[in-house]
Image 1 (cartoon, helix red, strand yellow):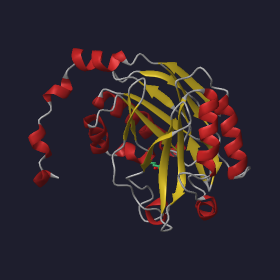
Image 2: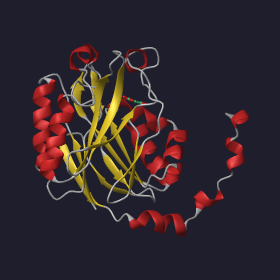
Image 3: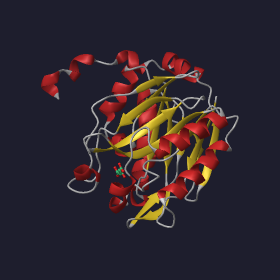
Length: 265
Ligand SMILES: O=C(O)CCC(=O)C(=O)O
């Protein structure tokens, strides 16, 4: 299967609506791909806290509408990155959306681990509760977002739920690029999955986002990587590699589940 990461520039020079239409045109141009991926919170801006109230929307809001149409036009599965979701009670979430080739919303995931410690997302958004995997015609996709990369237990949960390919949209700070490069490879290697990590570039809200989107195979090898400009990374993935590597190097079979007992948590 063929996948593309759209490493989008997200800065304060355009409105959410302008960026939505720019992103949609990039997605429409990916006809022939099986999966297209966008970064985290690219509509409002992950670091533009002052925009979140204005740009928050439902999972059937303007981003979903435009992305659904773009997925249908490209004939590809579309991981539309994440949006600032506002639910009917007014609570905001950082929510990833996954559309199928017909533009149907087939999965949504509310980011479980909120970044910011005592600021930003950690105080302005609610956290999700659910591990989400979605079966597709090329394999089972697991969903995670940015800061989630620091929490291996989520990725083990995705593995146990059947994930063969994990998609991670991000707005990772450039200042911690080395963590990004280490964690993406580590999560792919430890769960023996393909990991598709799509980061934004550009500066807004005083934060430079690091780019360096990458695709890592279940052996931990980087199959494709971007730099620091807006660009597209396209890779061909042999999904049979997941079973092959899990069979040839059967470390997952050697898990000792007793050490995950609740008293040790
Ligand atoms: O963990 C980090 O260093 C960055 C996380 C982050 O930027 C995010 O979750 O939005």
